[in-house]
Image (cartoon, one colour):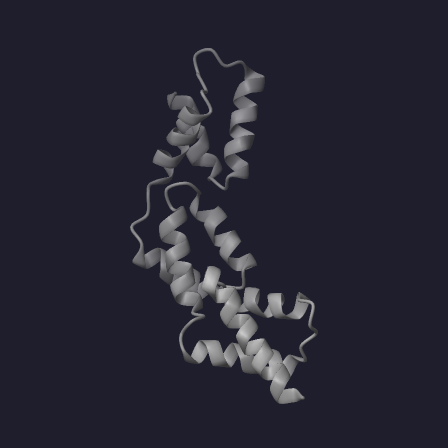
Amino acid sequence: MEQDLKKRARLRCMHLLERRDYTEKQLRDKLRMGKTEYPPEVIDDAIRYVKGYRYVDDARYACRYVECMKDRKSRRQIEQELYQRGVSRDLVRSAFEQSESVPEEELIRAWIEKRGYDAAAADVKEKRRMYAFLARKGFSASAIARELDLQ
């Protein structure tokens, strides 16, 4: 019976990985939360199996994620999302070192432009709203203030 469960867990992992990449933590969570309740040792075996074929690689996942999101999100926001997905700080740091990052000021200007913000016509309430929006995006306070003053 346990062999059948191990085989089913491995096949489930392979099926999940057919559609997209997962971090090890995400894959564990998927197995844990699925219809079938797999014991921890079966989940460990399935993760070892897919890691053995390098189908699950958190370092590769972090590099790809940083590469895809660096033009749209702040560094801090990308870091937080990777931490939530179970990627270690060292792997996140390494992924950023391998990637050519877009300057924070450029990203802020792009968001300001996209939102149609006009500094000359903006009142205090609108400036606060834009500042809060950019802060929620993970940009540093000093960079936001510089860009909003320059507009």
